[in-house]
Image 1 (cartoon, rainbow, N blue to C red):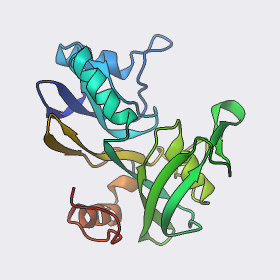
Image 2 (image 1 turned 180 degrees about the vertical axis):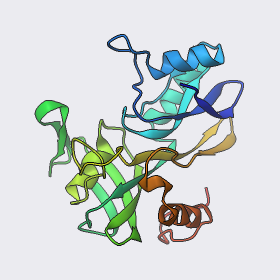
Image 3 (image 1 turned 135 degrees about the vertical axis):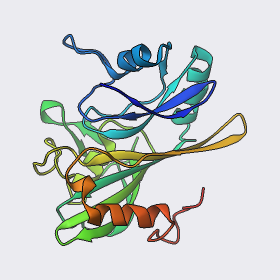
Length: 226
């Protein structure tokens, strides 16, 4: 596996995380951190995580000190994360906020509750890509396990290809598209479109993604130009 480096800074780097690789080594299979360290010849620190089935932008710190700073930004929700997801099911709403406590369900899955003592919070809006296929743009305000996957399932639109919460496909169509943050008073926006997946490579999706990159199609209350 050859990893793509998206951005390099003296204190951190961003890579493109491919699907099918976990963050940690397990069962004799190297995790993403080990693979990155071997490929780039650096000691790296994890500051956030993506599910094994999720692709997209992932940050690694180059020192323990930087890891502590970036981890604090993530824990304080000072890093804005934008995800893309596809579903073949029409949602209950075209946009809004999904909020509720999450609890463990069967076989490692989670479910959303109506209570809000320590809620997962996700803002989203959705666009038609083609008949029977919708694009969801999601911004999680918290960092719960499976948060976006469970949130969209609660809206009646499980993510395409998600074996836990959606319909079968060649991959789980969830992608960490963009992160925006301030580090040492400098603004960073790191972005990468999805590579893997038949539906992510369709011209209809690429057209929608191009419109989003150009600032089109965003709801008025979403702050597009960070």
